[in-house]
Amino acid sequence: MKCFERAAISEFLGDQIVFRNLLPFDSRLPGLPELRKKLKFPENFLPRKSMPEYGAVIAEIVQAARQLTLPKAPIQRVIYVGDTRMNDGQAFLNICRAAGWKGIAFIGSDRLEPLSIELEKHNDQTLYIANRWQAVNKFETFLAESNFTINEETAVLFDLDKTLLGARGRNDKVIDAKRLRAAEDTLRDALGSDYNPDLFQEAYHILNQIEFHPFTADNQDYLVYICLIISSGLISLPELTSCVRAGKPSQFQDFLEYVEERNGSLTPKVREIHDSVLARVQSGDPTPFKSFRYNEFRRTVEHMGHLADTSPVEEMLAEEIVITAEIQTFANRCKRLGSLLFGLSDKPDEATLPPEELKTQGYLPVHRVVTHVIGEE
Image 1: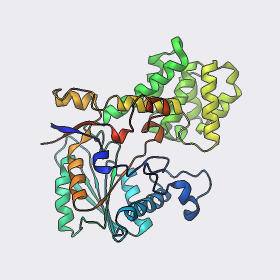
Image 2: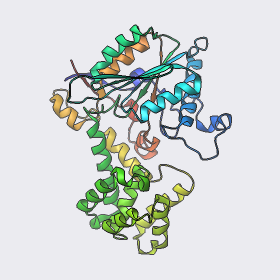
Image 3: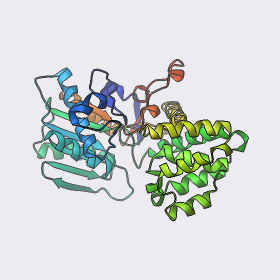
Image 4: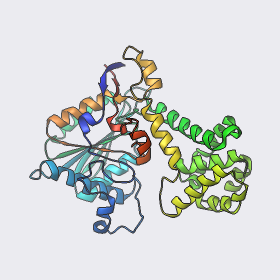
């Protein structure tokens, strides 16, 4: 591994990025509120990344982005770069199907086993799945051999989290660690001297397992809130896990009602958080634990590019969230060939954009933060 330079994602993507709320950072582009009527979505419906409706929204935004710069070169084909077969692969297929585009997706990660490449065909779309990020070089050869032209009529879509930033299998554990630290910051602030780090760690790691995803909806806001309630003493971890396994409560909303019925036992700070989370969940907000996500934003940007350039690469990969050099190089080549580059992030806006308080202190959105660029030589 080698550290090549310092850079920010915005240097090659600009502000052509959309986050979980489906509101493009570039305000000239239509977001979900403007597209809701056209796409016939119900009020307060926010599609997640693997849903067909998400693909429909992204297809509309990408076409609008191309219209801004080259209105006479409509998108004909898509390249997608991501890190998960399930979420990214399905998002890619849904985007292409929504607009009728041909497409090829590179799904990468770094794994210890020997290099392997798997092709998965879906009519006019292909998934190119590799266990090395460096295999993106072979992917370019595959594109050429497939007569898949990279030019002004090509949109190249990049997953941000654990692809462009914090590459899966190489640097992704730092992202997870900083989210966990943000959760700890939030609970420590809410509980003060009553905060028990061992209890939080135990609750978080148990309830973060697949077994409990139907209950937590695999939503980090829900999970951290549940850990807060356990840490407050309202219910014990063994009691809650036993109840969930018995199907009562079976969903997060059931647990919110359980807490609401007993909110007189909560401290003022915890009750304030509970009231806020309850109200936001009832309004359809999938990111109801705002203070946790603001802490996640702060922890994230404070661990981007903070080490000296002379630091060992191993230390950077363990302590910083860095840009994936191989994917940055591929993006720059596509940009030189005239392609539209666009970034997709499933992170909440609150975890990627600074709140007003931090903005006045000079904090930048994640995609504008300069950090180290690391990849294989």
